[in-house]
Length: 498
Image (cartoon, rainbow, N blue to C red):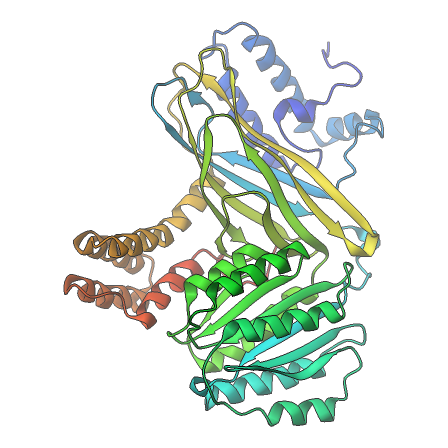
């Protein structure tokens, strides 16, 4: 006879959503069974919990019984959130210990497809292209950027708004923000742009920001795209303040850095503050595809202004956060974390690294993070807030375990990127021998993964380090963004979110 009473949520027993796949149901049951089985857990109440999750699994793993159970759930019990959240941990329990412990959480959030919304047009674009026209852009770089900008103008929908800002040591609005663009005049203005002067990024970003504000609508996809090959000096703090102001208005800021002389630390930081991304352009010929792909991703936006608000539990610190999908990059460690937009059916995948300090004896469950994801769906004129709580039970002697496949895969993919980050930290601290060893390890792993060209770049840079030199600007970016690109799903690129 079933113990399940009216009002009981057996999805909650297993820690999954009502949209969970069969694989997620199986995984949640295996994890709970290993922790609660009477053979390994003799605590009071563990056997009853084990029987509950066993019965929940028997129902949910049978499609007919699951459908019958779902029909009995009252409308007030059913989730109305158009999302599915799946969380995996690197360990099933926190050991009661006098030492600090490291734990990883892999969070995957998917925006569920809505059959009623499939034919709905995505939100209008309100985008400013901020183009570096300093002397270093002269030649192929400038010509490809201008040709791509003209092509993008021709692809605009009637509801879209585009502006173009050209900057060197001053800024000029080559195309005022507008939706009904005279294409001939716009092409003539763009063709007339000439490369000269120095590089002052803040002036370009400020002009682009003001153009986006001219047609700003919360229901639009508002974004600034910076294209540069230069290293700005003296205005970095002003750029960061502008990015913070853009973030407050939910205006994204993304960058395409061409070649090796631009400031990757600054542009990565600006993207991180606003939920945008920073893209390395190795060759001028790649500009067209990378810029076009970026506009395509923005054009597909369905859920907008995504963010994670959170606070860590007592004695818990977030020490690293990285987004693996849809766009790759480090995330800030303070709340809120801006996550940009997602297409319908798109996924956010975030890996969190947390340190847990020794716990008080009376604590049975360790709260890691408590917070919520929030986002808007403009086509529904709706805003959603989805609570999320990360916690792990505390055990005196947890069983040895292997992390679940999704988190093992996420950690293994991130290893090389973290190794090159550590090498850069070693160089900054004058530890050249340690940095060289790390880079050689990176090269060895790259060769094993069939990446001989990138491996050779790493080895060449390791030789410079052994001679007491810093990484070359070009080599540093090839390693950083090359190892970052390996994090993309096989056969995928960044415009494929699902």
